[in-house]
Length: 367
Image (cartoon, helix red, strand yellow):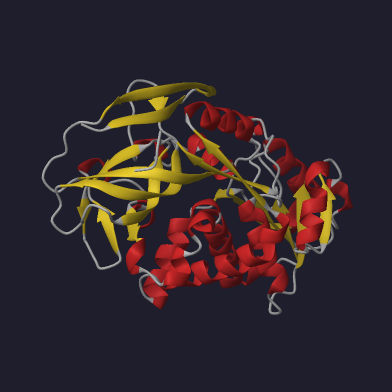
């Protein structure tokens, strides 16, 4: 039997963690075992935990009692298979737990991807995205070369692309300025870059960030104006604005809405990098803050453009942004349960600068 190591997080207190080492159950007909040798760790994973109950992220890889397995994007090798269409040795990319191994049940199998059709996943949101696993050895070699960037940046930058498409699809809601909270985040600066570099977008791009991340954002050159937290009054209240909230800071949202009043024409909640500052916001002037769910926009475009077309556009955009940003970023590798646990706490405490990307593994040794 296969031994595995996982990092569990208490759902009611994300700082309480538990390293679990055990034996995987014997797999049944149609199932496979994968060894997860790398995954990205970013503020996006904190958002998955914050929204674990509201959206259902905890349910993809259930844990007992009040424990949860935070979901991550990573790469894995098939090390055991009782699925005749998926062979041992295949390389996969997809949505995994913070674990060394996982069991999947492939279905709807195509040449370059399959869907995990485990019964507990059938009613989960965004299944077309979160339950889809790419068979990377059957993809173009160029895509295979971006494996680390794919784990670390693609899910975030792809969300940035979907947000960009959402804004453009709605003519930016008439906004003359687009305010991005936590612009130093991967999703934040990818959205800013796409908007800033699109000549058809006339709205001013404003990035909110902390003093420590200002230099990084300036180097990326993706904003027309950079505003440090606490100085929101420098934003022109006379122009219609769309606010894209990567921070999840309720007081910041209140400040911006009250400053802009009815000129806040769109307010989308996306991330929770400032997860401890969330909470009720009460009645606010301007557009009502709404929870942005990327799979809904993807599903819309799949109907309009054809299945997979938006994902391909997002991948192309991600590779361009990653190429542009890589000279300003550094990848930090963390190996083993103790190191991954430490990095999780650093993410919770906002101690990971935007210029750092964490790649992690819980495998004791390569498979």
